[in-house]
Length: 308
Image 1 (cartoon, one colour):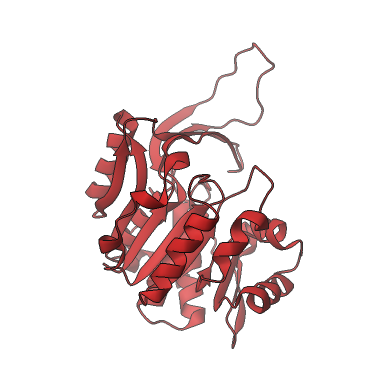
Image 2: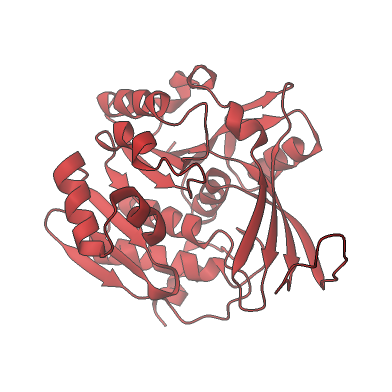
């Protein structure tokens, strides 16, 4: 396969519009409710498959209705689920996403099975078949973050596999304490600007990238800045790539779609500018529909956004 997406798999329940929360003990109404599969690794895997990339999923879900829903949705989208594990000891991870009128999201999260993913759960025979190992959801997998994740990235690189990493927001506040062992084994790093700022203590994209490259020797760094686009740099090139103008319905999964577009461009051997533009177009497609993957179409439709 081309990409193995390892990390967090979640069921998202989305409510919209929710612009404020009721007082304790009170009731508030909202207009739309949808149930979707989500989680960084899930979203990126499905987006990659929609873009025509051979993709596998690796992670842990519960032996429950939500776990079955995740596996079925992945399979229905053409993602190989041979690397997924169903555990009986814990429930599938779950997030309630409150979406405001302007598309901004607030989350309530149950960590569940993602918190019980261990290095021993991974199928190395499957990992070895991948061209890229993409780990999505670093910093919210307490049994896998840190040394276990570093071990996997190190071994993948030793096997000649390109390694890619996307972070989540670290509610524990440990940030670099957890991630530092992993970064020296990463080829492509794609954090959000907020995550990158917390990790490095720096504010500007260029100084963040220089610090990460000088300290951890990361080849390609893409910093996602939401509506402000993205900053992408390698040792030879740096680019600021704008977003594309679309009708924003729901921002859920946009960063994961960006990662999928970036990995797809990388696999197709596109240059950095074209790769980053595909990533931006995939992120733009994502926000046009409710849910983390509903807006993602095929490569041809995504490239139409890029050509706007």
